[in-house]
Length: 405
Image 1 (cartoon, rainbow, N blue to C red):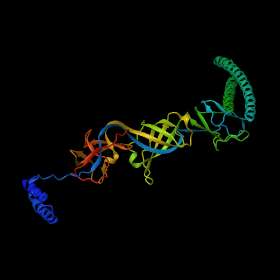
Image 2 (image 1 turned 180 degrees about the horizontal axis):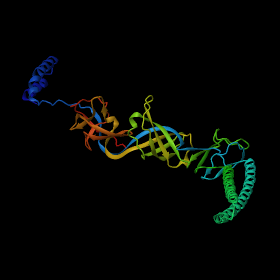
Image 3 (image 1 turned 180 degrees about the vertical axis):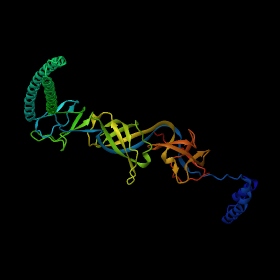
């Protein structure tokens, strides 16, 4: 305290009457500005707001495309009868059976075909007999021709010596010509018989083929997914297939893709499939991506081959998580980043001062987003991008609680 203030207090203690006390108080108030000048000036207090900050940290990030669709066969194979007009005698396979190529699925009635084959074999026997007769006739005619040629040779030798009449020589020549014609006719009969034999053999081969086809066989390995065949029904290739097979039991998930995701997804990418109404997850691989986008719906499509088809059934609804890319990179909670038409920014807090910086982002994985540039590992930013702080504001940073991936 200043000396002047001490003098005033001393005067106040001396004066004991009420009037004197009031006078002393007035004197104190008048003296206050003077002693206040001797006191040091206090610094103004800064009231900075507390704000939660979070740090840029390295995280394992996965770029995903989520979609959903229906499980269906990769390839369906229809089994039709290869013989028309025969009734079904027996069924030897049912829906759900796993079959190998060549397994008999059904048997058709073969009575009519067996009867036709018997008739053809009888006709073949007749043709064989006719062929033998034609060959015997050819041999006989050839023998006659040979004899006629010998007679003609002898007659020509005698004609040179003048011991045979010209008319006799003409007769011998005519006999040779007649025998040659008969031989030619016999040979043509043999050729006709051979042609008949080929026709009969072809007809018998056709019947044998039809008989073998009365056993309706699986053309490929697979699982029977449908059966319309019934015992007694007439099998027809023009109607519904007798059986439908899922080739190799290969199933796929066919799903729609948003237009912006079509170029991200590629063949052989890994997929995790979740069945609707079940917690089960199965693995798969991208089999094919549709090269076009529907002009009306703006959707593309993807086919995902299921690695273990025994765990699902055709027709099920499922969701697919397609892994597009994976890497470890600097990341921030997505709430710490602001994106507008001009730029993507974050509010960097350095020396308790807010600095708005532009950042380049990459993979978004759940609640975190990759920071490709603009910030470094360990930099602290405002955790809530919507917090009302401006560039240059002074704040009191408070670390957020650590989070897990």
